[in-house]
Length: 298
Length: 287
Ligand SMILES: Nc1nc2c(ncn2[C@@H]2O[C@H](COP(=O)(O)OP(=O)(O)OP(=O)(O)O)[C@@H](O)[C@H]2O)c(=O)[nH]1
Ligand SMILES: Nc1nc2c(ncn2[C@@H]2O[C@H](COP(=O)(O)OP(=O)(O)OP(=O)(O)O)[C@@H](O)[C@H]2O)c(=O)[nH]1
Ligand SMILES: [K+]
Ligand SMILES: [Mg+2]
Ligand SMILES: [Mg+2]
Image (cartoon, rainbow over all chains, first blue to last red; front, top):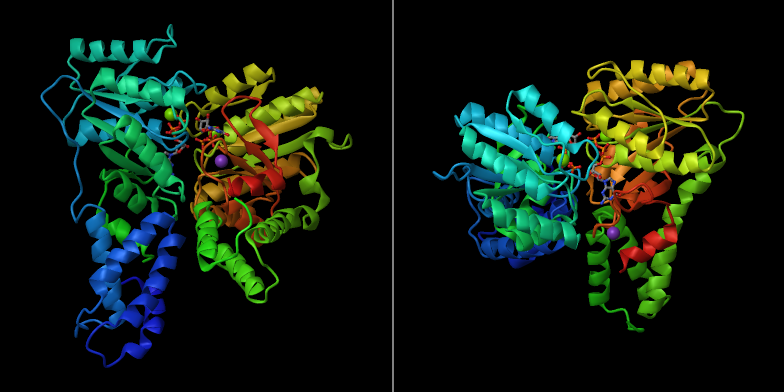
C-alpha cells in the first residue's frame, strides 16, 4: 500500500528498528515526509498543518505493531485519519423529501463542470433512484449556456424547461418550478452560471435563488485539479450560500485531488459524487477510502 | 510592513505564501533554501532585501523562457509578419479552463489591429461548443467555420484553412475541445489536427497556446508536459486571474519546460485579456 510514501518513510524510519514505541524524533521526521506528500497532492497548506498535527498526536508513543513495519504503520495511521476526515468508509447519498419538486441547486466556479454534472446527476437519479427530473439552466450570462443544457437534456432523454424570451434567472427558476409542480416532476435540477466567490453581485443572486427555491441539496461542483485556492472558494460559497455537498469533477485525470480533503475539512460538507469523464454516465458515488489512497499516491 | 530581521518565522511565512500561490513544493523549497543560505551568510539582512532578492529570483524564472525559446514564440500577434498567410493559431488545454472565451478575446484584439480573423470551431464534441464560439464570433464580428457535431475535428481545421486561403484571411484561430492530457486517443486527435494544419499551410500551426486556469494546482505542470509533447506549444495563457488564485504553477512550468506566459485572462468579457507582465504577476503573489 502507498508505495512511494511507504518507501520514503522506510528510509526516514530505518533507525527505528528494535524500538517498542514510535519515538518523537522519528514521528517528527516522518511528519515532514507526509507534509510534503500532502502538499504535492494539493491539500491546502493550512489543512495540511492541522492534519499533520492530528496524525502526530495519534502516532506519538504508539506501540510498534508486530504485523506492520513502522513505515507501513505510520502510513496506516495517516490513511485511517484521512478516511475519517473525508467522512468515513461509506458513500453519502442525496437527501430527498416528500415535497414536490425537490430542488437541487448546482453551484460553483466557472468551468468546474456544473452543466455537465447536472446532466449526469439527472440521468443517475432517473435510472438509479427512479426519480422524474426536470432540468433548467438559469445561466443567462455565458454564451450558449442554455443551449448546452438543452443538448445534454436531449442526449439523456430528460426534459429541460426553456424560455428564450427571458434573460431573468429568477423568472426562469420560478417558471421551471411551476412547470415541475404542474407536470408532476418530483425533482428540479437547477444549473447556475459559474461565478467567482468574490463576485458580490453574483453571489447575492445565488443566495436569493436559494432563498426562493428552498433546495434540498445545494451541490458545489469542484474541479479535481484545483490547487491551494480550493479552500478559499469553497469556504466562501459555503458561508454565503450554504452547501449540502460537493461533486468532485474531472477525476478521470491524473490530479491527486487533495482539494477533496481541503474542501471537506473546511466546509464539513460531504463529497457525494465524483465525475470521471465527459460522457453523461461518468458519475460515481464518492468513496472516502479511494480518494485517500489517491491523495497518498497509490 | 517595514524592515524586519529575517527570523525563522519569516521564512515559514514565505514558504506559506509561495506554496499557497501554487508555485509548488519543489520550487518553493528550493527558493526558501536559497534565501536561507544567503541569510546564514549574512548576505541578506532584513525583509526588504529578502523581498527584493526573491522578486528578482522569480522574475528571472519567468523571463528566462522569453530569451531561450525561438523568436517565434514571443512574437506579438499584433504585428503578424506579412509573409505568413494565413497565420494559424491553435488553442489547447484541459476541460473548462477558458479556451473558447480566450479565443474570443484574442480574436477581438487581433481584429482591432486591422487583421481579418477567422475562427474554427474544432470542438465538435462538447454540447453546444460551436454555438458558444458562434455567439462570440458574432460579437467580435468575424466568421466562424463549423461542421455538424461529431465531425472529425481535423476535417474542420482543413475546412477553415481552405476558407482562409480563398478569402485571403490573415489569421485563423482554432478552438479545440477540452481534453485531459492523460487521454491518449484525445491527445492523438490533437496531434492530427496540428499535422493537417501543417500539411495545408507551411509551418502551421505558427502558434499553439496552452490555456491554464489560475486555480490549477500541481497537476498544471503535467498538463503542460503532455500538451507540449503532443503539439508544438509556444506559450501559455493564464485565465481567471480575477479570482483569488495566484496561478503560481506557471513559475514551475516556465522553469521546467521553458514556456513563456503570453497573456492573462481577467474576466468574462472581450476586453478582459492582458499581455502577461512578469512584474505585475510577481507583485500579486505577495499581495
Ligand atoms: N474529463 C472530464 N471532463 C469533464 C467532467 N465534468 C465536466 N467536464 C468537462 O469540463 C468542461 C466544463 O464543463 P461544464 O459543465 O461546461 O462546466 P460549467 O461549470 O457548467 O461551466 P460554466 O457554466 O462556464 O461555469 C467541459 O468540457 C466538460 O465536458 C469530468 O468529470 N471529466
Ligand atoms: N472569471 C473568469 N472567468 C473566465 C475567464 N476565462 C473564461 N472564463 C469562464 O470560464 C468558463 C469556461 O470558459 P470556456 O471558454 O468555455 O472554457 P473552455 O476551455 O473552452 O471549456 P471546454 O471547451 O469545455 O473545455 C466560462 O464560464 C467562462 O466565462 C477569466 O479570465 N475569468
Ligand atoms: K488573482
Ligand atoms: Mg455551465
Ligand atoms: Mg471550449
